[in-house]
Image (cartoon, rainbow, N blue to C red; front, side, top):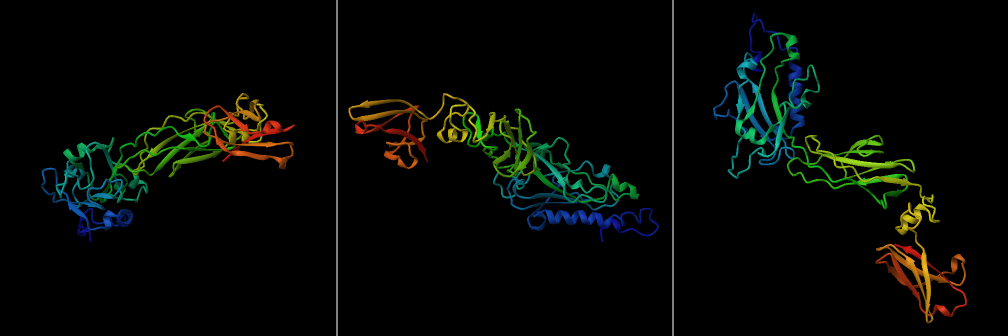
Amino acid sequence: MPLWLKTTPGDPSYSYGLSQLSKVYEGIGQARKFSPALRLPNRYCLNLKDNSPNGQIFSVAKYETRNAAPNLSDVVLAFVNLDRNATPATLGTNKFNVNIDTDANGVNDFGIKSGRQYNVRNIAAYLGTDSNRRNIFLIPGDISGGDLLSQGLYVSLNRVPLADGDWATAPYEAQYLKLYDVTPPPALGAPSPNLAMFGTVVGNQVTFTWAAASDPDGGISGFHVQIGTTSGGAELLDTQTSGTSQSVTVAYGTTLYARVQQMNNAGISGHYSSASAAVIALDPVADSDGDGQSNAAEQIAGTNPLSSSSVLKATSTSVSGNDVNVTVATVSGRTYQFKSSTTLAAQSWSVIGAPVTASGPATVFTHANGAGDPKRFYRVRVVP
């Protein structure tokens, strides 16, 4: 039986706590279920900052892996009030020493680092009045790792309330303080629209991708993505994802932007990235620039679907001896196959030479001894 229930009939507070006891133990049970560290034998008994024990408080640190960052490996600093009659004023000045390095390797046993920010949640909070209390950060404004190591962790513990109504404001509860690194993650680079060229994507589905930022102490739990029709807008999509890409389906002609922020394992978000460059979703079968080529064809060719001067076409033809030379407006890096035919029938085209990968805006294709034919047609196709 808990010490605080060992009273005798006639004591004014004899019955207080009995009806609330189930919620006290429910909070403790949820903490044990939630925390791997509480189920492991790894522990260190904590003293006050002057290294003296506190006879009123049971205090112990439980950790999943020694020296590991708390966002990557569970750390719980557990405190229980052993004196049912102690008030917060009596116990409120307690600061416990967490500057522990048992193996003298220069690394804090609980993964606390001077340059990081920390906070705690009581995962054993009393749940009789508010089921969300175990999710609330308890240190106003957070605490730096340097202050936590040098000044210790302040703990306030309540006595058993003297009236049932007091459980709503100052309940008796264990303080199983799960440690979180709340340092904001680094900002990311702007997302990039996939398969975008010349500020366009052919099709009504646009996919934005980005690179995660390294956060070895905070971890990465996911990303918050916003996509809108203005820079920084979110009217098209406002969501979270665990991956490094996000797709959205829009109407043809929509101009859209995206930005993203990284979240760490404590649920803390970093600053938003700058917005992506604007991208326009184009109808594949339309010819947005009126140059005779569909938007889908221009995507394959690597030409600009919004510029009629950017199109796959022959720009000149010349004859050198018996050879025919055809100059084509090309895109560097694209590969082309030169073909010829004496008729425009679809099945009559013959391959001339091996595919050629362009290295500039113009490429000359040569048909050796092609000048002897009375009539011949030439074309160039983009190949994979």
